[in-house]
Amino acid sequence: MTTHAEKKRRDRPWSAFAALAMMLLALAIAAIIAAPPARSQGEGGARYTGVASCAGSTCHGRMEGDGTVVRQDELMKWQEPSTPGGAHSRAWAVLGNSRSQFIARNLGIGDPAKAQMCLGCHSTAGTARAVPAEDGVGCESCHGPAGGWIASHYAGVGTNANPDAEMRQKHLANLSAGLKKLEDPVVRAGVCVDCHFGSAGEGQFVTHRIMAAGHPRIAFELDLFSSLQAHHQEDADYGWRKFGSPTGRTDHVQMWAVGQATAIERSLALFQSKRGTEGMFPEFYFLDCHSCHRRIFDQAKPVKTSMDNPGRAIPEGMPPYNDENLIMLAAAARLASPALADQLAARTVAFHKAMATDRASAVSAASQLSQTVAALKSSFASRGFSGTDAFAMVDAIAAKAISDRFTDYSGSQQAVMGVDTLLNAMVSSGRITIGAAAGIRGDIDRAYAAVKDPNAYKPADFQGSFGSAVRAIRALR
Image (cartoon, rainbow, N blue to C red; front, side, top):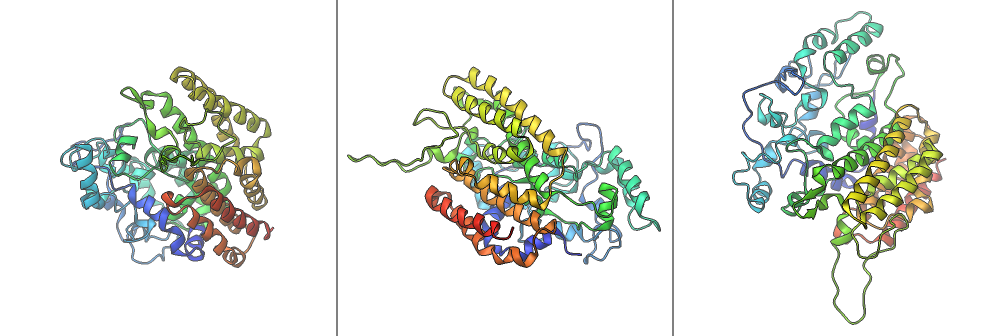
């Protein structure tokens, strides 16, 4: 059975993914991994077993995806040498390249294999787990330490004559033993943003100083990145195990919306913490990179290099908070909860204004905004979305009140990824056909091209190409 992720890979030309693939690969560039410490337990005392424990030919180590319950070639997919699907397995190996050495020299951290600031995101071993660092980001980084559940998990694979309710019960037992419930958007988002957005943990926060040394800017969209990393197929067996029904499937609109809320929730939490400052300076990670990184003109006739943004109530010349996820969340909120959408808009304006006052005011406003974001995340997580909702979400993203805020690169990039993942949600829900989606791929690719190079980004050009893509999607309604 063809999976949602496989449809995406097949129907979307590889060139359209170049920038996203680089983002996935580059996340494994600047971190520096030391030899693993001697202990093998995680924070909760669970035991990590390493990738090898999953690699048997009766488990996930087959060369062909011909298993009766799961594909059983998941490790081969995880190890794909040149695609985003294999990026996690390459996280350790990439540390030996010249760019990693360059970043280490710029940071003055000596041997990159011993620095502590980046250990958490480039290997399962990086946070005090006795597994081979060469595994890179292994199975347990996402699925949780397997010591408590691997035996029952193994016993439940391909051995049941009646796989329905029994498979479901085994899965629930595995969850109780420490397997992470990644089919739950809230759980998955919480796992992914630790590295793909940042956390308070050691080695899991790419500061402005690290980016200045050569690490790429952090960018993430939960549903699209999940699809690029998917090593499984969503068939009847998957539905029974994960959702208790043969028709259970990932709700990709919900996954996208929860991901947007989780990203800004994490960002605001880190901003309010000690991570919000570095010495006498604010932590510039939280600000919109390209509001400052523009060409400087010194000439008699001034040249305005920015566009007015109606979503930012700040004085001209002050760097704004990176609101790429807030923009997407404002669009999603209109569909899920109009009352919360109004509250989000008001508190977003108040937060931007507070940023121009002082840190104490900004932290207080961030706390208020975080409460609204958390309420929206709960709203998204508690309801289902249909293919019709995906169309409505595209309309919301393209609405003038939202699209007028696409004045900077990061927000525009999120808009393209969002519309792309929503288009594929329409396919997976049966709202449109694969052929119809493929027919407008050229429009989507042109929107991707407009955000391929941040140095070549032009807001007016992007808005034009993005508008064409949205009109093509609307024509499929």
